[in-house]
Length: 222
Image (cartoon, rainbow, N blue to C red):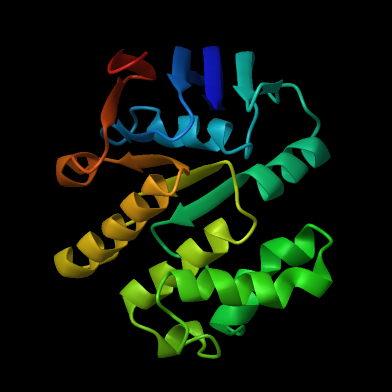
């Protein structure tokens, strides 16, 4: 599903050069649930941006479902991102003036499927237990419900991979466990899930843990 080899990504801050990814290689097989752990500055967020087609590496290769996407132009990355990857963020990233249903419809609209968007969004919201909250705005929902909306948006296009960046970071422990249970359920349904986290308890829900430090994988690769 994911095959990255020798990924390098550098950033320039004034006269300093930061090597955020330093020859990173990893494989995530179809149906795996994997955690990427590391402290702030370890490179885990940069890795997620590359794996999520939000950014390109300076060098190295990244194959998603057998296709080398590391050299695609921005519009090509956007198309793969929309159709193959579902994102869940710590801050939910919901549009405040839109209902839950309208937020979840967005990926289908961007994919040029307006006629199917409402039906796909309704099905996704039902699957995360929000059938009775479809027409509520984000500010009318609890934190856990907002993250469920984000999960529904992530799966509405039936992506190959779900990338979750600190998905419980803004939730209390009980609600966080509920969100992790939903991610585990999606994984048992066959979806590949990658969770980026600094929390060992969150990582413990995954079958494999990849540890990063100073832009490198220090164990868990394979």
